Each structure stands twice: as structure tokens, then as C-alpha cells.
Length: 106
Image (cartoon, rainbow, N blue to C red; front, top):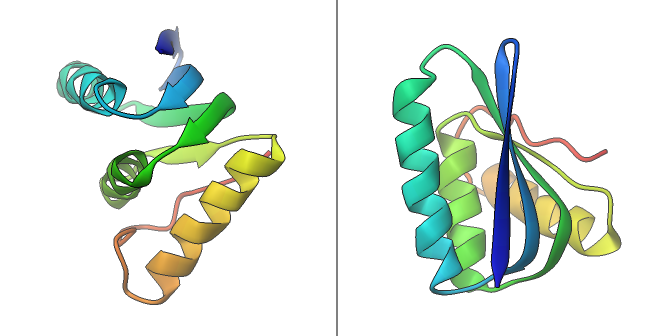
């Protein structure tokens, strides 16, 4: 299961994720991202991965696409830091995380 909590702040929107980023929750996050992104055009979008316990390949691919569209990622656990490192390495190698390199770890 994946819990998605959306925090609307001045100038930004953060998706706080808790649980496992696996199907069918990957598709749910993508639908949620597309709906919110369409309604908050000028605000910065961030995904907080600190509460995520597992990410499968489809989840990593979605996070890479989100990064490519300018979404920032942040996380504090060893798992999320490893995921962010993988995404940034893919980006540097021309892999899936093509985009503005806005990933960040806290």
C-alpha cells in the first residue's frame, strides 16, 4: 500500500509518500501527479520519499520521468538516498532521469 499526502504551500506542492512504490500504486501516483501538475502550473512540485520502504523498477522509472519534468525528490532514509543516487547516476549517464537535475536529498 502507498499513502500519498499532498501538502500545498506558498509556491510549492509536496507529495509525501509512505509505503511501497509498486504497482498498482505507481500508476496511482502518476495519475495524482498529472492531475495536480495540471492545476498548479507555476508551483514547484516535490516528492518526499522519506516514508517509502521499497521502490520497484516501475516506481524508479516513474520517479525518473517526474525528475525529467522538473519535479524535485527528497528523502532521508538510506533507501531513499540510494534511490536518488541511482536516479542521478542514470541522469549523468544519459539514462532515464533526463532533465534539469533537480533531485535533492535531505
